[in-house]
Amino acid sequence: MPRSLWNGTITFGAVAVPVKLHSAVDNQTVRFHEVHLRDGARIEHRRFCSKEDREVPREEVVKGAEVSRGRWVVVDQDEIDAAAGSRAHVVDVEHFVDAAAIDPVFYDRAYFLGAGDGGADAYRLLHDALERTGRAAIGRFTFHNREYLAAIRPYDGVLALHTMRFADELVPAGDLDVPGTRHAPEDREVEMAGRLVASLHERFRPERLHDEYREAVLGAIERKARGEEIEAPAQPEAEEHDDLLAALQASLDDHGGGTRRKKARA
Amino acid sequence: MARAVWTGSLSFGLVNVPVALLSATRDLDVHFHQLHEPDGARIELRRFCAEEDVEVPLDELGHAYELDSGEQVVLTDEDLDAVAPERTRTIDIEAFVDLDEIDPILFDHPYWLVPTGESEGPLRAYRLLVETMGRTDRVALGRFVLRTKEYLVAVRVRDGALALTTMLFADEVRATEDIDAGGRKPARAQLDQAVALVEALSADWDPGAYEDRYRRRLQEVVRRKGKGQPVEAPEPEQEPAPASDLMAALKASLDDLRGGGASRPAGALEDLTRDELYERAQDEDVPGRSSMTKDELVAALSHRT
Image 1: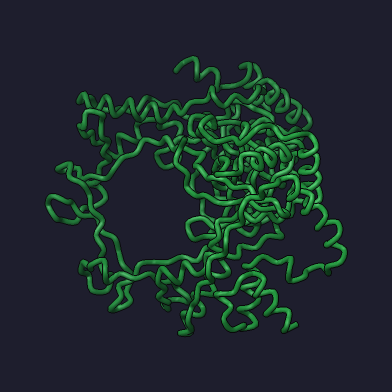
Image 2: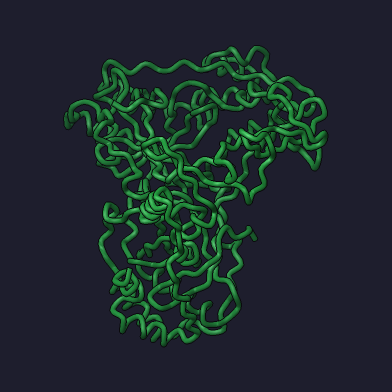
């Protein structure tokens, strides 16, 4: 059983469901640490006072928030933690919503919930009720001294918990500066683009998509370890088509576009 | 408008649209910085070579990777740039899929894509993608490299613009087989009761209705501290015990919603969480509030209204 990050209870009505929180994501990015190129020695990050230009010991460092330009308020960790909210290990469900109505932009970090001690049946019941109704539970919980809005939904036979973004944290499309065009796309262009989209349409199979970059980085590390030079492959310049119709036509003639042609060459 | 985190081109067949990537989130958190206590000046982090004890300029930084043998391999910025140069400049659309086939667990960070440049061709191509993809619930899948990580991305239309979301690769989502999936399948009558309770507690998804209370409380902490007022933390609440009789708990909840809901006025103190009650108590300056239980807070507050 994987280690749990947090143990607590989901509550709704008079029902309490003990749960264990586990991470759902396993970041696979190739990790490097910083070294000095001249001698390969580790880089240390040292704290300097910007005014005195000297290194300062850790015990002289405090946390501050800038309340107005140049005016700082020093706050200690206990005071920051006081904002955490209820420290009870509870996900307090406010209500249930149609899971399909939640735009995925609201989902932030994902976790899995496992059944907690003494709550196996309640866990299964909540899972099955959510699955049957297509609903997600929306509630709040405190994790690492910070309160989050969370959505709980069925995923692959277990419950997944997503921390949620707040609506005011999302930039609305209206704030974007998208220049207008003189002419709307012509019917013929829309029709051809539609055909191109249809020709590239497929079922989503995430397991077939690999992080090729990660593989390329690991390959580069291997070559470097053997003492080889790492050279960039020659790159064709992207063609600029100002004639949209011609580009669409050429893509369709290509049976689905340059992607496939490039793949065949690689 | 927000600063672009990346600029390049979105390529769709032989159609290339120069675009800028903007974050679709804004950071509203209260931020803390390190300060030097004696003089209140900002702390700067400087890079030092652990061996030579000298400050290291950025162009002398290398990226070390430790092999299984323990041997260290050092790559330069140039080496990393050479790994997949095309992907750092182009988001290549590989396929179109249906949005509802993508489980949202794969979605990572949301961005907006906006066209750059003034020339009519690329602007029309952007508009064309918006129109074509907006008609169907199709999502374009592509990939690109941002700051030494390759991302799978989903591009779709939201509110008349192209929205891009970075995605996790399938092998970055853990398997659920080791997660304790609970007990046996519930009996039909029990599931019916649970479904009835879920439906009774249902509402429309209204994202604007939720406030980041943590952000507000943290701003309040900083405000009080700035005025020299004390900051006190509420006492932790007790964790409820799981009901020994699940069916009885379901019934009691439903009865409470049906019966109690009618007799109790909307917005009654009893319906608030202890947290919300505590905040009211703070507003009303109720003495001894930090050690009160939920019931005690309700009692103390009801005397005042």
